[in-house]
Length: 110
Image (cartoon, rainbow, N blue to C red):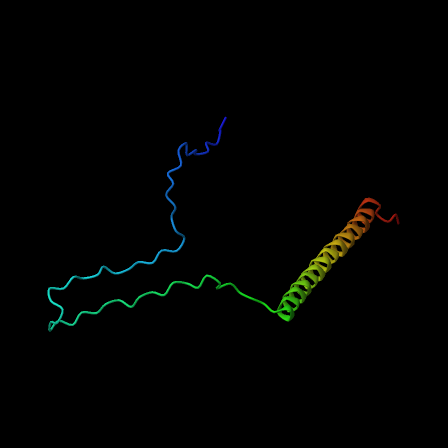
């Protein structure tokens, strides 16, 4: 039937594309060093610091772990309460169905 076709690159190109590219404006070559023209040159872009990761203190790590645990407990409690509400509703509908069936199948004889 339908078979998926996975593209295969038989020969790697060796070209690595950087994740972040910075577009730099072309540098204009002017005719003289001192002229009446007022050219603006783009400001140089500073490279990102190699250690620009978020660093947490031990107290910060404990706060993040505690917050995550609290979120998990709250979400779990909400989901359990919803499941319990569905179960109670289903049981009450089943009881109502049994009562209605018994009333409709056995009419009172007078």
